[in-house]
Image (tube, rainbow over all chains, first blue to last red; front, top):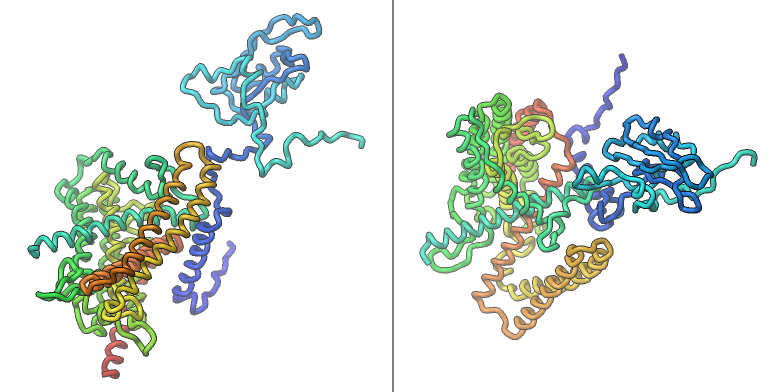
Length: 181
Length: 424
């Protein structure tokens, strides 16, 4: 058993009055400082000031495109297979360009079922699905609106980073590290 | 005017003062707590975009509490259950009746006193009424017919009774010095000077009594270091079974009690309506100067605040796109209007001067303002302490009350007696 020694109090600490005054000074200092200089207040005035999101936040998905504008997705079902929440539903069709075999006819994500684990992004061999929209607040009054279809995933708004002042230095704009340099 | 009507008007004014101060105190509590803890505090409720830095929130609170469903649980003892909030609120409202807000205006028939009730046993009346606070809590605890309420009520009443004693004894020392029970006389006594330079306030004449009274007052009004009756974060208090307006009665009673206790403290120890180094006759002679100073203060303050609000207006326009952005403008115009009005009155006053009747009334107004300022400051002290000190444990509370405060109060009486005998 460890005995933590109680610090012995001096006489002015024992009568408690001077310590009260000291404590009062501390709180008054905070009060005055926060009235005149609002810099130290931690409260975030959401939604007027957007909350700074970490760039690596796993937010709403999006599907990426090739240079010619067609979706990168080849409908390989990797993401649908790996999804622990069974929220991805893909219907494939034959791709007309002769370069890849398949393309998605339907690509639906039920965002209400999604657990935002990010396995789909890891599983994707084509870098076709990403969770980098920064769209963390997805609101609607209707259940159907939460099933995101192919069109929305390709074009949906909010694909820009919500860059924050605090995290600006570590955005993905940094060039990737390469081996052998 | 008949005396009854005058008394009624006075009572209404005092009640209005107390209720407004309760609202302001709730605002102090939230906003002050927020700033002390490095938060922003309430700033969302608005009326046409005007948020008054969160002062609209208490109004919203009241509306919510009024329109909330009133639930009387089936198992309560109905009579006591309904009596308790009434008693609690009454006890908080009654003592202000004998508090003097300004010096007596000379005139026929004893003049006009700024007290609702001119009792010659004022302080005894206050002690008597405030002891009834225990009944409100006991009734609530017993009437709720619930073991936790019951325990809470018992705890609260035990605390209040033990601190009542210390409070009464601490006042005894003050009474020995002042030699009167009438509050206005006490305040008038404090107008003199101590050793030629210090205002003869109770806090300088009887420092131990002041500290004891303050401590006991905290316990009496169930404020933080002694807020075991309520203990919102840990323990169940006496008002668990209450809802809506009945709960609000306890709530308003608590804040009203703060106002009462600060008024008593101001009257007994901080010189009441006395302005330091400015006794009433001097003030009445120089009422013109006092008015001019007040108006000048209004002008300067109005201009300064108009500038500040103008700055703030820019920031609001950056932050908001809805109607909230106009608030800075509204306040800027208000401050400027106050400055202009004060300036106009000031200039008009230079032409006209003050009549003798006018100077009397001006002196009274200045004293009322002084008294209210003191009460607000002391009330703020209550809130300040709440967000500084941790809560006492129950045994610590009892031992502080019985083993420290009561002996100290008796010691204070003894010392005061000796000194009074020595001084003669």
